Length: 185
Image (cartoon, rainbow, N blue to C red; front, top):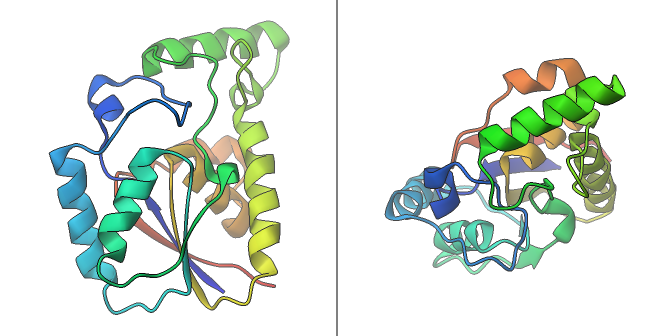
């Protein structure tokens, strides 16, 4: 199976550099985010996807809807593709990173294993992504589009390209950037 992964288009929280791990918050695509999705739609127009998977977040669903119009490919919402529950909802990305580093230092663990407050670690996200990929392997698809989040795409790359935890920080998916992976059954 071939998987195409796209990080959602620019959303309002991206402009403010704030954390959003709650899909119930009304955070939507910006005008630039919609244009980015239109550009990706054009790049992917000749690919016949069997399904599109998105998270519970409006920004992934809005991106997928633009790409899917007028094709009408089945869209499946899967909470395992949700953005990280950071433990720093509404705080700046910088605050989150600093807090995560403090926790890691205090607990003497890798920063990507650290949890801020009652949030998830990146390692927790990797487990969710692994469960999702195991599920996906069992599906009869040839080509799938996944519209997800920065960390989720990092986790997919880690699993499918066997990138070590220490090196994944160098992989920085941009809004509406396309990544192609092979998922062996």
